[in-house]
Image (cartoon, rainbow, N blue to C red; front, side, top):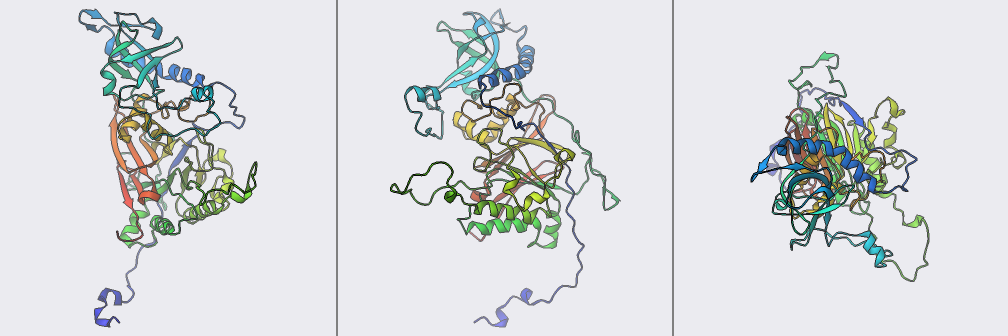
Length: 495
């Protein structure tokens, strides 16, 4: 038994008479863009090859501009570099440069045509953690509407490439009909819109003038919270503690007044994919059980969706929420994933906009990828499938480098539709990055990391990999003034 003398005196203090000011949540300025929305009459009958032609046509002028500035008039060993319009116009012994689309010929990469020809189309496609081989068997091709040529040379080892990126290469064709690459150019970052280009900064709070910072927004350290991989399952009871702590952290319910004031400056929560855990059966199916065809209602588990809906319904009265679907969420499997239907949120959908044409609601279910303006900054985010697929092409584990490559290639999903499922666009290619974002985040990554990259015309992009909350217990906070990113780890107990 513990005696009263052993109890810390702080636990025996009476209630404090100190008065604390009531805290209000900082307002959120938010303007979503519908870049990746698909029409309801979408069809999958068209060919996927049109996407590559569209991508090449859209990015090629920017690539050729960069290449022309670097190579036009350049003389190497007494020979002037010449531009050729098509891949098949490359001639042996002539120093030239040409623009095209990269295609990676890799032995470990799945090939649907080979599977069908070998009568393996009935089986589930094999998955592999990497397509990359370090034995030198991987081949890099450059193609356009005229044909394809193989690229060789040590320069290819300096810059990792993936299928679908648009580049310009300078070199000489060898006796084997290959292009020995001496230099590579790409489009680099596109033009970046100024802050508050789509929305107006807030000017008043509670009827009082707000002090404006140099960036044109109210000072006070407002933040945007980004979390990914909540993975509601309804099976792991111990994980519910971390989710409850996350909820209480965002609402500021269990913190001291000083920290609560900081939490009140979080203006919006962005959920970057994989809110629902992957459904894995507990037991192997009984081979003797009667075989069922079509939809099996008995296999549906509504618990994860109810838990997610309850979580959102608790948080939405205090914080506006933007939710992106992920690979494990109830949305289309092909990119761009369409918004999770409001029918999945019987409680949270009360906070959606009654008329979307008049503006977003407090709860906004968006596409993956998604872009919009948050606190005046242009945000671009995905659920993580694009980086996970590019990771298979490259020998390193530098995911920030992969994100940087996508920005400089001006394509948020370069490997679609080759190895990343995609809708077969025929008239437009939304994966092409037309405006440089200020913040580019990717969800469901192994760990938190961040850095800032710079463009040739003063562009600055904050790159953020958001880890899975179910795996790490981490949530990312982005400062709305400096765009600095920090991480907060939430654990149920001491470890």
